[in-house]
Image 1 (cartoon, one colour):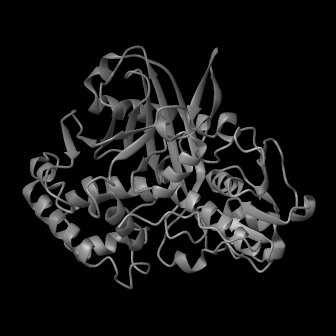
Image 2 (tube, helix red, strand yellow):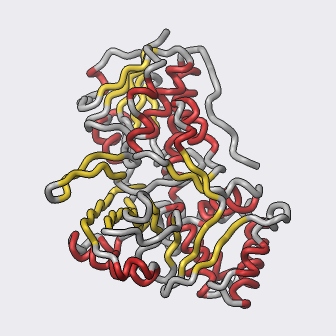
Length: 425
């Protein structure tokens, strides 16, 4: 069987390796770092006299992420994802509302939750209903890649409170970009696939193990034709004599490693994510997770019986200039506004992870700049969440890119196979 060199051990490279390995190709994957997973991984950090294994940032998925779930199935780790059917919206002071599906069919399955929601007023709920109906009706508009999501929301008379407490709260976390910078097509996609097209696709999956454990040696044990090389830096495309090569790297690294491809990445910008890790001396919540309204911190995830929380801030440009102590102070101040028990607890230790180059910025007009999997060099292919996957920069988008690159390899080898799972419809 043909040989394939994959450069990059993030989700794009790993999914391409799994698909091609299952198809019988001989695969060598090289990752420069000591661990796999790219920007969705875990590693050990020192905290004073102790060490902890942490995720660089809490990553979640929805059931509409069908290719990511397929990839987890290939690795035999799908059972390590716990799905939640309820979303908890917390207001400062601690009042909590729950978003869950009801008895009505899609797209009306959240009607009961919205009617009971205390974090939105009547005018906000009416605006929200109007907006969701318009989104369903206009999801094929031709200008959605030319306008921002905020422009569309204002066009459809969404109230400031509905924008801030619902649309922004969901979309900024999903797309990792602010509403006034986000192409409307990506906001539409998140809401259509995740919230409207079925009554189950919204369910949120959270790994119940550290992210790095999902890609460990056991996941590759049944594929002797797939060899994983960590701490292995590839300096040039000609370094290995493989029949085919996949560059599964961030856009700036792919352009630097392979200038002969002539990749034009000038239009790409980065959008940051910040993860904050807080360990307390006692449990501070029984909730599994919660979205935090009206503050900088956007979500918390309960990782150890309420004693250890991971907080997430997407599109976190406001934190870029703050030091570690300042971010921890802000996170502690805000979490105590939402969780009364946290006011009585002592912070034992904390850690901050800033992913300044977490994703590309999904601004209007970017789709035309995203390259496909195939390149002018017939034996070189591209993968990565920044390529033309049909999705924004998410774990699902990264896996889609890996599958698309793997499909392109099989076509070039004269053995075409399909790996991509169609979107939920």
